[in-house]
Each structure stands twice: as structure tokens, then as C-alpha cells.
Amino acid sequence: FTSGSIGGYYDFAEVVNVLDQLRATYPSLISQKVSIGQSLEGRPMWMVKISDNPDVDENEPEVRYDSLHHAREPQGMQTTLWYMLWLLENYGADPLATYLVNERELYFVPVVNPDGYVYNQQIAPGGGGLWRKNRRDNGDGTMGVDLNRNYPFKWGYDSLGSSGDTFDVTYRGPSPASEPETQNMVAFIQSRQFETALSTHTYSNLWLSPWGYDVLPTGNDAEFSELNELCTEVNGYLAGPAPLVLYPANGVTFDYDYSAKGTFGWTPEIGGQADGFWPPASRIVPLAEENLLAFQRVSLAAAAFVYVDASSV
Ligand code: 0X9
Ligand code: CA
Ligand code: CA
Ligand code: ZN
Image 1 (cartoon, protein in one colour):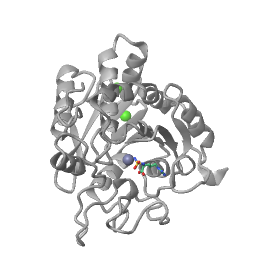
Image 2: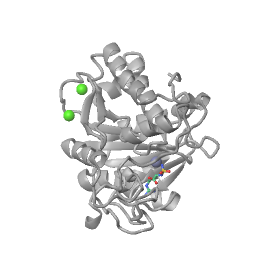
Image 3: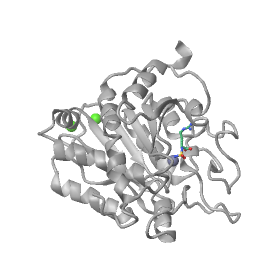
Image 4: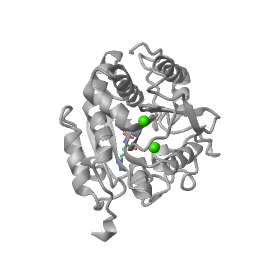
């Protein structure tokens, strides 16, 4: 599992190969990979579904896991793949794995920003590339839009939580969902009903909940707070609303999830200061392991909560 060729991490082609291998090994538990659309440079954004009868749309609570919105955060992708592997390898042996595969439809998009990730492979073939955004040519000598500032809900709400300057790492893009990667995620979110979702990032040992754009109540603060506690029981990450625990950010994934579909979404920021964006290969599995319980509980919670519109309370 730790044999990826980019500093121990899987490069983009290797991730695709892992998805194909998992399907070949567990054809009754995981779907073929399906592209939810192409990136700006034309790469597929691959999605797989883990469930019993994976090729049938059954009436089971749906959950989404995505990673690599930010190209320099490969541990998020490795952790997501680790959870997939745990589900598949333990099916039929571990009661929780069996239950989650049987009673949920778990959707995975491990590489949301393939162009940025491949760019990091090119500039730093041994790992360590620090490109974050996608590879949009902004037309002024700068490159890239921050895909986690480009979602259409509260896009550009203020300049604290995103930037209008093309050269900034938090550049929000010229308009809401201007980027194909964001458009594909928005269409995917619209096409399904995810009850819960994890959009995994790195790093800072944090567990972030909505709203992200400002310190304002959701209609479900009690539910978010309950899961914040449950999901950090093993790793001890600091958990809470993102603007309190980290900083405000607008146009982010979990705000879009919650506003558009009532999806309960979170963002783990995996790893600590010493880990950084490219932890040594020896840290890949321990960091994945310390997040396994959180990933499991997000799957479990998909049958637990009812959305409440904040304006009604
Ligand atoms: O800034 C981000 O997009 C995320 N942090 S990262 O270091 N991975 O770039 C955090 C987004 C979470 N949401 C808010 N902070 N509102
Ligand atoms: Ca099923
Ligand atoms: Ca379904
Ligand atoms: Zn990130």
C-alpha cells in the first residue's frame, strides 16, 4: 500500500490502477470506475462506488468521500484509499465493514484535481510538489484557481475567505463554479442524495464543520457538534466550525453540500505540523489509521440525521 512512486504516494496513474485492481479483486463490492467529467486539461475525474450490488442503484443511504481538491495534499487521497481497502478486505469478517457495505452506498472521488496533482508529479517527481490550485491559465501570467473557493454557494462572500487576485493560492476564479472540476463535483452532488460527506484535506490535525464562510449557526449545530466529537475520539484532532477552529473560507465544498442538498459534510485536515503536505512514506499508514474511525462514523451517520433549515429555528 505504501509503494507509490511519488515519495511513497500513488501518482495519478497509480491511483487509477488501484481502482481497476480493486474492481478486479472485489467485483461484487465495488463498481467499475466512472468519470464524473473531465478536468480542464482533459483528465477524467474518476469515481467508484462501494456497496453490495455495486452496479445497482439501491435504496440505501448515500455517502461521498473526496480528496485532492488541493494538489499538494496526497495524504488525503491515501487515507481515502485506505478506508476503501478496509471496507473491501474486511467485508464478511468484520461486522462493521459488512454492515457499511451492505447498508450504504459509498461513493469515492479520490482525485478531484488531477491536473494539479500531475503538475506536482512533473515539478517534483520524488514528491514534495507544493502546487495547490488547478491549472487554469488566468491569462495574466498566473496559473490556477483554488477549487475549494470556487463552489457557487457564498462564492466571493468576502475577501477574508477567498481572494480575487489571480496569483493568490486562494484565488476564487472569475465566477461561481467557473472551473470544470467544480462543475463536475456540483453536477455529481446534484445527481445524488449524499446524507453525509467527507472532503479530505491536509494538514493541521483538525476536524472542520460548516458553516465555513462565516461564524453563523446552521440548522443542525447539535448534529455537527455530535459528529465533531465522535469523529475525533481516536485522533484527538481539534474539532469545530471552520472559521473558529481555522479561518473562514467561502465557496468551499461542505458549505455547498449542506446548502444545496442538506448533506452533512466535514473536512479533516490530516496530520500535524511535522507531517506537512508530504509526510515521509512511513507516516502514510499511521495517518490513515488514525482517521479510520472518523471515516467509519461518517458512513454510519448517513442514517442518523434530519436536515433543519437554519431560517426555521
Ligand atoms: O483552506 C482550505 O481550503 C482548507 N485548508 S487547507 O490547508 N487544506 O487548504 C480548509 C477549508 C475548510 N473550510 C474553512 N476553513 N471554512
Ligand atoms: Ca447496495
Ligand atoms: Ca441509491
Ligand atoms: Zn486543502
